[in-house]
Each structure stands twice: as C-alpha cells, then as structure tokens.
Length: 193
Image (cartoon, rainbow, N blue to C red; front, side, top):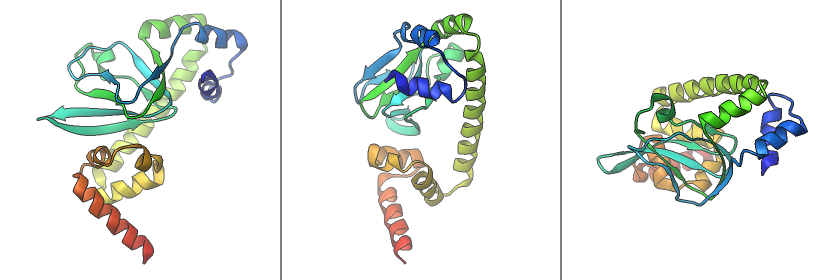
C-alpha cells in the first residue's frame, strides 16, 4: 500500500529511504469500510485525505435529498473546506467502496515539511495541477448538457459507471435516476447506428 503513495510522490520529487521511513512512522495509512462517513455536514474537521484505493463521494443534503458533487478515486486528494475556513462543513464525505486512505492533518504535514523541505515543491506542483483540473471540470459542467456530461464521464472516468450506484451518478450529473436510464439508452442507440 505504501508503494502506491511512494510511486505517486516520485512523479513530483525523488524520495530516499530515510524520507520513506519518516512518512511510514506517521501512521497515516487507514483502511476504511464502505459506507463509512468521513465527514458530516455541520461537523468540524482537521483531516485531509488522499485516496490510495477506493472511492469517496462528497455530497450535500438539501431538503432531505442528497446532491453528489464529486467522486474521489485513486490518487485523488481531498482537503475539506472546513480545514481552511475553520467553519463547520457544508457537505458530507462518505466511502462508496472499501478504501485505503492516507489521513493527515496540518500539524502532521508541517512536521514532515520541516523535516523534509523538498516536499513543499511536490505540494506546490500538485496543488497547481489540482486547481487547474478543478477549474476545467467546473467549467465543463457549467457549459455542458446532461448528455454531454454523461459522455464526458464515459470518456474520462468510465470506472465510475461500474463502481458507483446509479442514483449517485445521476445526482452527480445533475439529473434524476430515471433520466439517467433514458440518457444511457439514447447514447447506446446512437452508438449502434
């Protein structure tokens, strides 16, 4: 499991055995069961998450209805807004699969950055990539029709089709589950002709 993290880190910076041992000593690897709530709406949180394996969903509960905003899968980072704002969370985080997560806190991150300053370079590069990706995803969602969103999902994240319940996918796409069934049938018919 730790090799997944070390492989990810090595995409940004070189990492030696001493640094690997320091990371392992932090006790940051956690197995989390499917349906575990990591963060509840209204809760304060001081942990960030990095998905090594599995899937985590973020969603709002509005008038009793869940509105899915994102799915985080392998090599995705989750920094709840409430860590930065100090306010209670406006949304929920839940594991949709059994997951292997790196769970960290700002104090742990400060500890590793003091000990190994080069990790700051990695964090900076990764943050830039994340901001760009989120902006592209947000823009794409805003200007796309539900059918275009579905086609983008099939193209960029086809694994979600099998990994996530259909009602959560529909919510993520901004449509009702029945509409997702009709949309899927329409796309299949188009592809056959």
